Length: 70
Image (tube, rainbow, N blue to C red):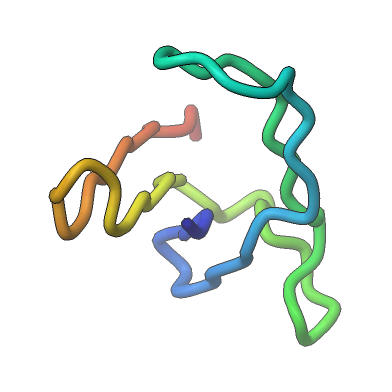
């Protein structure tokens, strides 16, 4: 799972807080605010943010996309 922007930045989650078990999971997924190079993941010129989930329930990749105002 990664958070990806239209600027080509990808970061892995830094934390997952949720109760154990259950078929429908609910919790808080946290990502770092800066990429590996120290640049903010979401900056003033970021227009798209995607959550990419790989390898769950036999699906190679699912992408959830948000278009940011700008």
